[in-house]
Structure formats: C-alpha cells, structure tokens
Length: 66
Image (cartoon, rainbow, N blue to C red; front, side, top):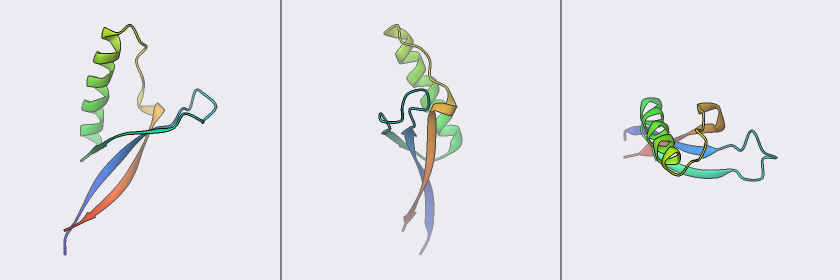
C-alpha cells in the first residue's frame, strides 16, 4: 500500500477572533498552496478586497492510502 500526502488549506482567522475558520481547498504541495494563494489574491483584487498572506492559512496534512 502506498500513501500520498495532500494538504487541506484552512483559513485560520488569525486577525479576527478565530470564529471564522474555514476549509478552503485541498492541494498537493506547499508550492501548489502558494500558486493557489496567488490566484486567490488576484481574484480578490478584482473585487477590491485586500490580499491575504500565507500566515492567514494553516496547511493540514492528509494522507491518502492507495
């Protein structure tokens, strides 16, 4: 049996009171997370919203067994 690690991206609401934590997406690597965040911030910019930084998210490892 082989395993592969994915990461659940959780918005951690570090600048709020912590009540607005949400699961956002599943990515395959830290680099994929950075690409996702870049795309997310580009979309946020289109709507006049502030950019989010890496520190606003937690990457939770998730092992997939094949």
